[in-house]
Image (cartoon, rainbow, N blue to C red; front, side, top):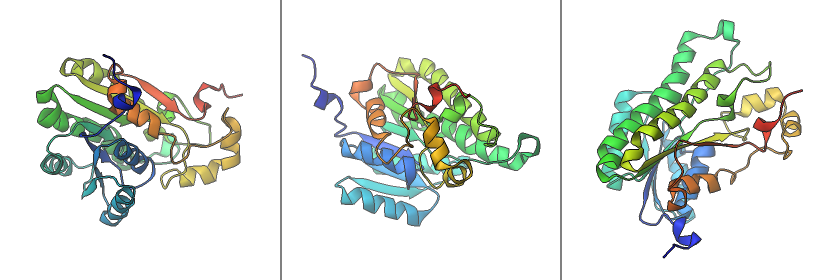
Length: 263
């Protein structure tokens, strides 16, 4: 007997850890997973923002909790994994979303800023995935890992958008996704990536102001930026039984920006 589409997308009884989950895209994905039935644990560096995020989730009837962690710090990541296991029991779904960005001309890009971006966007994804898999997913031969990359990882930028480290890190996140999926498929762990385009957020505020919202909309075939629900469907697809035969893949959620050849 095949299952209904409602059953395939149902996450009741599942648990999810979402990094960078206090606002923006992370909170949107936490909300989506919670609305599908999962218990949610969100993490970020600021307790006040996490408290507000969890209040928002609980107001929607979602079972949610929070823990402070810094995904650039290996010690903090280890403590996060231990605490997540304590609170959730097991971790069925891991969303690696915590991120950092830096704008500077390549010839003047500070080394410290390069390291900051790489430590969060690449090393942090690796360390938390490794710890969660070893403590929860591999032994149960079950797990879903979702890595938030970016269309910035697919190529270069317009000349006045100078984010070399960010682009490099997101390209790495895409191939990290492929390589990890190939290795951990034997444990029935799927690993997939989401590549958002331009979404209004605290991280993108400066870029949107610099590039111009109208200009960015005009370049997108759908003539719009992403909104507060555009990642929900893909996130739940990757996390649920509906996506059980999808691994090692990335999908751009960008209004079509990445398919347009710049003129």
